[in-house]
Image (cartoon, rainbow, N blue to C red):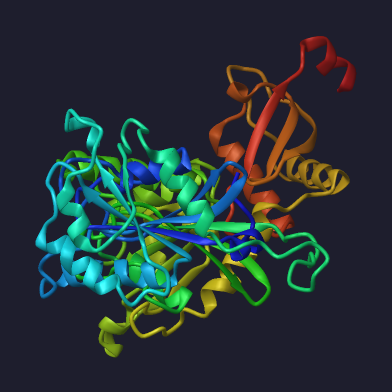
Length: 461
């Protein structure tokens, strides 16, 4: 279950920093009891900050897994990762530096500690991977870093993690006492809308997250595939709570060769699974591609509300900007997009981005909309009178009555003949009739046909 935004705002923050491939993501996964951070032997797997909620002996805190502190600060991604790690450390209440116990102290470790010396509170140091050393004591060269207390750990096997966490908890700021003004409850937290930012690689997803949040939450470059982990960012906008999930770009399966790329695609799909709304980004220069339509179809089939943003609109010459043409082509390729809000803007300049919030709110309300049962049946009977269902295998289907059985997405159960006796074209006709009668913008509408036995049909007919 996702924590609400008010709770997140009150939790202390612990940041994991260190050079690449020291086991930060493995420690993150162990402490958050998840597999949300990608873990592999390839250095630099985690590039952005990955955020989760951890709990240790009743103490809850936000845990940030940063990208590896890169050696080449002049290389574009390396410089950005380095900046992200330092920013996370500066914003954290407790900093844990994870070093590789097998490799010993490196020049990069020394550079990192020099960078962190300005922190108000000295970082804790986890000398990781001790399980492969054949001994349970620390290499003496790590004391040259000027740290008095080191923690021997194996994030993979859990060795020493308890002692490390005891020290982390000791440094966490004490929560405000109940009854004080700071600790007083401000009412129940409002429902939070989880929004997955989805699309092909390099369409501007991370740039959009940064624009919506207001700072460089995600690393942004023009190199496809920069974001590999889904990134969760709680945010409140005009009194409403949201969770923005930036995902790795989803590529067509034949182009997904590497194990990490495949894992990123899986995580993107999982991010969509735990979200309410999919915000699909389209590259204005390339237009809607088959892969874009496929991504939209996946979100729709999984019952997620959908908003479409044609991004990089500023990159199109004004004389070539034809919104109606783009919308028409999109709806021809994926007819369900006809009911999806379509926005045009630029994550880079911020043009049109402010309209996203209202669109998300509209589709969220539609996604959770509850239709009155009498109105549902009025629409159903009016639809049947206008156009009765065609006979299938010589028998005309009968539809008696309907009721809403679920929201997110809205789901109607129609009692009468079974689904196999209702032509697909007639099912689409009914969906359109309900859409015309109710505010269902940007959300799938599911119809379930509940069969009644022949005697019941004769009695109700």
